[in-house]
Length: 315
Image 1 (cartoon, rainbow, N blue to C red):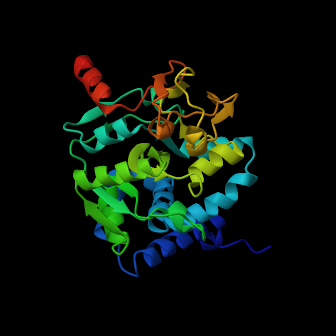
Image 2 (cartoon, rainbow, N blue to C red):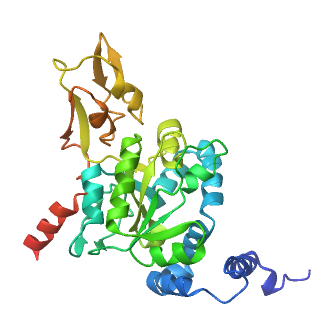
Image 3 (tube, rainbow, N blue to C red):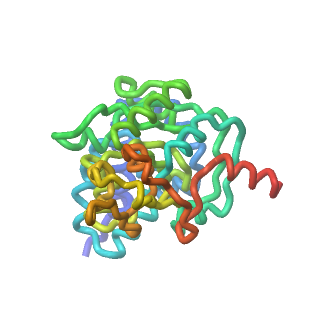
């Protein structure tokens, strides 16, 4: 029986196909500078295990990636849901904590990250002072025909992500100042959208983006709420209602992105098992009857100011 030639073996074909995809993705040229920069940053191990290809496909064809992920999530079993969550996950952050990341004034090394991001593949990382920020189109919204707006609300934070987004999506991305980033965060919060800090194992477990997630389009929120895929970690807080001050208007219930608030006997009631502490309800309440409270049973908040102080004390 004739033996299969080495070049025809599946792993070789896969490597060849991925290499071809890479070249096509780089517009038929040798690797663009931002791709070379990302490859050097990710290191040899992530090149050899093809994590870099996964990261490249995600960054280069994000809309198509999210379209595919949306269709994959309902079909996943328990092991598949866990695998996706381990490799693609986010931390819900309050508006105050999102602002602190944008205005970070010194490098902050984060250790024991699983206390903040409760996934077994979480890594140590360093948040850099005065991070570069690029604003780009939300792939989740654009992957839906009936998406909401605006669409240019996702933020790549730090290198090499900023350069990659700007070079590979020149028509859809732009570099912004911290003040411009803050104005986008504030406008999105007013729309009732959720700030999330995203991490990816394929990117060395690094924090790489702040997204402003809407319940109608966000693949992460859809996976969490509809399909039980643990893509989002709690902010570390939970909403509590002052029943005596509650007017029973229902504004908080209508605004809650996670369906965690209902009205009973004219009073807002929070289902703490569904609440991720995003703070949307707090600012929608006309009587100031809702406040976020720290829940010690939940992961630590991603508050870079506190983490910086702890790092200084430990160092």
